[in-house]
Image (cartoon, rainbow over all chains, first blue to last red; front, side, top):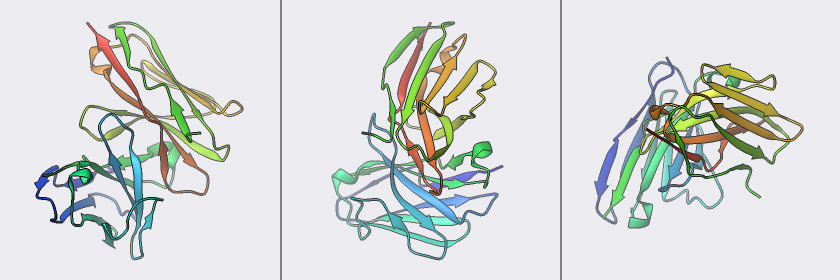
Length: 118
Length: 110
C-alpha cells in the first residue's frame, strides 16, 4: 500500500511555456502533499506544502506565482511551472504522508519528474 | 548551520565491508528520524525509521542519540546493490514537513 504516482516522468519543454506535473495517492487519501526540487548531486529542497482545499504553503524563496500548486481533491495535487526557463530544469518530486504514525511509515514519494527547459 | 548535516562522501568500500554513516541535527524538537535511500535519478525510498532504542533490519542497524542529536546507520556485509545515496531525514514536532540532509554517496566495489 501507500503508493504515490507522479506524471510525467520526463518532460522537455520550450522556454516560456508552462508544464503541469501531477501527483496522485493511489490507495490512500492525502490531505497534505509536499513538492520538492532536487538539483544534480544536491539534496531534496522542499518547495511547498500542498493542503487539500486550501492554499499551499511555500518555502522561503520559492515564487508562488511561478510554481502554482493546486490540491483540489484528497488524492491529487498538481504543480504547474509557469513560463519555464532553463534554470527551472530540475528533478521535481512529490510526496504524501501515508500514515499518521510517522515513525512507522514515513512519507511515500512519487517517482519524480525530470524537467528540461530548452 | 544546516538543520541536518551529513558527510557527503563519497564513500568507496569493497564488497563485504562494514560502513557507517553519521548525521547530526540541530533542532532539539525533532521527533521522528529516518534513513532513506536514493538511487541515481530515482525517488528516495524509506530504508528504515530510527528509534531511540536502536533498531536493526537485516544488515542495517540504525542508532539515535537524542542527547547528542546524532543519528547513525551501519551497513554490514555490504553488497554491490547497496551503492546509492543515503539520506538522513528528520521531522520536527508540530511540523508536517521532512528535513533532508544532503546525503552520503556510497559506492560498493567488487
